[in-house]
Image 1 (tube, rainbow, N blue to C red):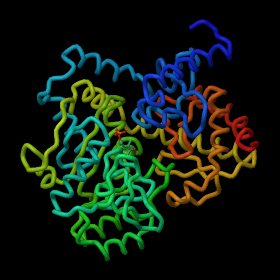
Image 2: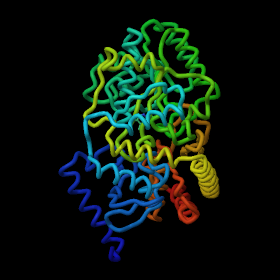
Image 3: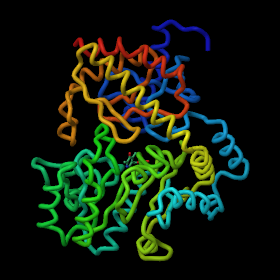
Image 4: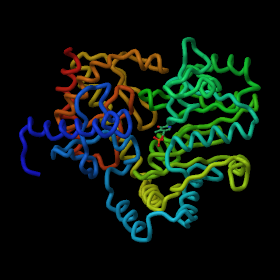
Length: 437
Ligand SMILES: *Cc1c(COP(=O)(O)O)cnc(C)c1O
């Protein structure tokens, strides 16, 4: 693209954003993309390659969003693109079973053995929604327990939010969610086993399942305290409830077997996948104990379906991505993560910005407050304005961070020395911007 002045570049994007807001609510297809919490005009992406995205104004950014996780190999990996093109030439959607789905189910099972059977869907939201329905059918119970700050997609029951108190009956977390839908959801503070035990002592015979992010990364990254997930397993088993581990974000990203591959020794009943499993295409999955999975239609009485489920292009992207995601890929992402954490800590320390870098495997996020951060209340008590200044200074220097203080920063195996160098160069100025309100 031809050279454009800084003002010129802003105008192209500003005009597009203005038009977008006329025809699309907020101008975006998913809320966080609208820059609501950092202000300003979002980058409208025209293309992406490896660790970079390019805006419609021709500006290039080192991308630390990676499509919110799926781009483990970097954007538009040639072999993944080729696999999708290949599949596309054979038809875009059949509404019939394919061999590739069976192959992908085998890959999932070999990486995550607790997924004895797998059902493919198109979004993480569908995967968790189906897991909840399955848990209710299997146990004959209505209530579910989720943790404050854990995100499991936007189905009604899982949009319940905590009221006051540590453990409380859910209140609708969105307009349009009924009190009844939210009322069957009990919300407990994350990492708070005492509160969870009290909830089970009171209502254990009503609880169908506990759902948890394998390692939460949607309130910023907040790792489970050692033994926390295993304790959830014990507690649910004692009360005849199921344990659903949501690996939509962590699955196939933090290790070949996801968080369960790092923090094993306990077996959840159901696991949900998304993001990396589709390699950037709309694909997600639910897996788990075969006897539970067999409750799904057409074998069992739990209805679940999808016109585009197991779509051949998405399946091809997922298969190619997982085939390429070998030990070397995970080692690279792990190393880049450590490198970036150290550089961010150095820059923020040098500028005297209070911060806490929180990690779970190769996932990390930066809280603009001192640590520790163990739950959502801790995560919320950070200086979001400082983050917004930091974010915009990074963006002005050509580094696109997730536009919210409550998100993980995503790296890929394509983040090479050049891309890392650009990030590291941008950090000191951004840290100074964060320091000065
Ligand atoms: C992204 C995410 C979801 C929802 O997935 P969608 O594909 O956006 O519907 C569910 N759970 C977790 C942990 C996620 O990170």
